[in-house]
Structure formats: C-alpha cells, structure tokens
Length: 359
Image (cartoon, helix red, strand yellow):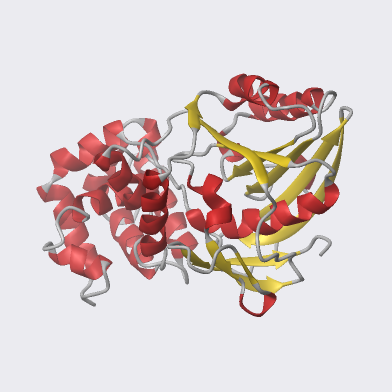
C-alpha cells in the first residue's frame, strides 16, 4: 500500500491504522475502503489528523467530518458519489476537499466525537430482549449504556425484517430494518416484550433538538452501506418523541437509575459496542456493580461487543465470515451470582445474526 521510507514512527502508526481500516471496510463499504487507502498514502493529511485531539485520531472521525460537510452541500461532486449518483473515483475529490476546507475539517475533529448510534443494532437487541423475556419472571425496564441519542431505546417501534425467520415491530413503522439470519434460530416475535421504562446513559448525549447535532449523528453513518435513510428516519422519530438520555459515567449513574425503578421490575442493561470504551478497571467495576445490585432485584445485561471485550466470552471463537463479526451475549444476575449465555455472532451494524443461543 504505502511506502514508509522517511516517515516518523507516529506517522507510520497512522498509516497502519488507515490500512487496517481499509481492510475492515472490504466487502462492506467500498467507498470507505477506497478513501482509507487514499488517506494512508497522504502523509500531509495524516499529519493534520495527528495534530487533532486523540479522540479524532481514529479513521471514522475524519470520514464523518467530511460527510458532515457534504450533507450540507449536495452540489459538491463528492456528494454525488456518496449518494450513488456518480461512479467517479472519490479519492482525489476527498483529498482535495480536505485541503480546500482544512479549517472546517480540523474544527470538526477538535469539537466532535464519533457517535455510532445505529438503529440497525435494534435488530440484535430485539432477539436478545425476546430471549431474556423467557428467562425473567418480572416485567423489564430498559437501560441503554452508551446510548448517544437513544435511538435504540425505541427498538420496539421499528419494523425489523428477518426474512423467512419472521419480522418484529409495527409494519407501518417509518423505520424499516433488514437483518439477515446467517445461522441458527433466533427468537423472532411479532412484537418485542413490553418495557416498563426506558432510559439511556451517555457521557456526551446527542441532543437531536439541535440540527447540527442531528446532522453530525447522520454524518457518522457510512453512506454506501444502505443505512443512511433508516438512520434519518429513526432520528426523525426520536425528534418527535425524544427518549430520555442522561449525561454521566455509567458506573456512577447506574446505581441511581436502578434505584429509581419500582420494585418487581427486572433491570435490563444494554451495551452495544460501548463497553469497549471502558477501561479494564471500569469493566470490572461495572460487573461488580451489577452483581451488587442483583442482591435486591434481578439484573440482566445484554451485550453486543467486539471479541475479547466481555471477559466471560473472551475465549469464544468467531468465524471469519465478514468484517464486523462480534459477539451477542447475555448475563442474568440474581443474588450476586451470574449465569452467562452466548447468544450469537453478529454484525456490528445489525446486518446479520448467526444465532448460537437457545431459541
């Protein structure tokens, strides 16, 4: 890919990261694969990114910044490629836009954080909640940790089509999600279990009442993966009836959130690709917190995370089927003890599920 001669060690590390990301996008986002290869070969641009805050160093940050600008400039030739109206090579246009609008790009990298609040993840949450309902004797209250704008708190209001395996949710929902069943028999119900309450926790919640915040959330969606329209629809739905998302650290906020739940309700805590951002110490503290809280009520944890993130599933093998193959698991805590169940191998944006748990 890129020649490393004369590069500093930090720049080489950035090149390796962008090359890895290009491989990650292969067979899923040809657009971002092409752009990642181009960025990896542009040391000047990588130098600019290196000068941004560390939170902006990951490739999706720069890609989202450019997408954000294009969402407000549909006449840009690169926007035509993003929308599928042009088959031109996006790489030179992308690199030129970064140079022409460097000040705007760097301002976004300095002030915005990656937010992957993908409503498609509800396609994975749904079977998980349905399976948990068969394990719990109490009604469920949903808490989404790392909720961002809280789009997945509305999971029961989306129509999720699993093909021959069935469909979940109202057929007339403005949010239509398709999820391929790659294996197994996931428990697909016509409707998700009733939720007594729903609340999100996030360190930096997205306020969809602010147009720029809503636009940034949409900018974080990879434009050529078929997810843009459904995300826009879910944003609109959430703007009409905003889910409650409180600002705070999960381990600090959870005791208060759980303490406010009525007696006789099982707390179902969901993390979807959020637990990976916890430090190792905070991960341990999180599990210990759930164990302690389960002395007074049943606690369930539904996790969709990368391989090795949740310690209980660290030894689970994952077939190399596609980019983004991760683990869906559940834990039920009662009386300070937990029972763990691997539920499936899943795609990070809800594209497919290979069910491994009981039906």
